[in-house]
Amino acid sequence: MSFSSDLKEELLHIMAENPCCLLAESYGLMLFGRGFSSRELSISTENEAVAKKYQYLAERLCLHAPQVQKATAKKYKVSVSDQSDRLRVLSAFGCDGTERVRRLNWANITEECCVGAFLRGAFLACGTINSPEKNYHLEFVVPHYNLCCDLKKFLENNDFSPKEVRRSGLYVLYFKKTEEIQNLLGIMGAAKFVMEFIDVIVYKDIRNNVNRRLNFENANLNKTVNAAMQQIEWIEKLQKSAAFRELPEEMQRIAHLRLENPDYSLQQIGDALIPPMSRSGVNHRLKKLCAIAQKQKGQ
Ligand SMILES: [Zn+2]
Image 1: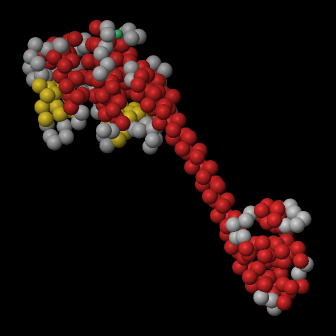
Image 2 (image 1 turned 135 degrees about the horizontal axis):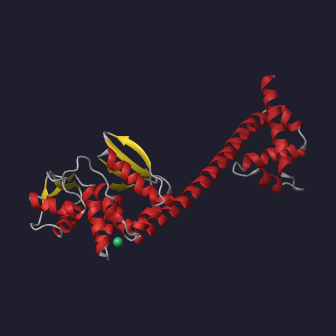
Image 3 (image 1 turned 90 degrees about the horizontal axis):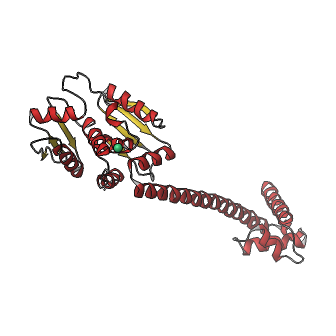
């Protein structure tokens, strides 16, 4: 199950309480379906439950119950096959079938309570959402330019700011901001889903922070280990030369400590000395040891 179908499943279980909202939801689902005219009134969807919802809502406005058909291996289709039924449905939404362009009839969504119901219907017909695990993205894919402009205006009127893009001949309105996506989910009535969405975001945030810290610590650890390996290499070379025995005892002691304890930090080497030495004191002397070793090599 994709994140989209999970969301649709929750939306499908919401029952509009007011008759005005039920009509607005039907309008959203049917207007953004495949056909919305006197010649064709239908939806084509991969989601069987969405097809059944379409069937259920259309049936309330028709005399003959439309049927869900399996159009292809993946697609379900519902169409209102009776001409007079199609006109009946259209007239319920204030259309008479002579409209040449599919537009939004604002008169079907006049009440405040209907906004979410209409958007829920529209989302069921043409919406998708990505899992916030990947990226934040919710979109409506509209096949008609004018209708896309109308939906954009409708969303803007309700304080949303969708972005627009054209993709393979279709018009897409999308949202990337988490807050807007949450608000949209909320207005559509997907309360449970909002929580899930927030959970994933919070979890992702925590995980990113932890990963960032681990990467940082690993990088530092690698740096320390590499430096120690390099020091050991030089010190081993230096030990073989006479110059080593001429070094002050303290330097020899640091060299031994480094050889015997490759995993020691500078601080740990300093602490192991008698008397103890500061981290920078050890660092300074190790650098000096390496410099002497390099000079030896040159001779
Ligand atoms: Zn309403």
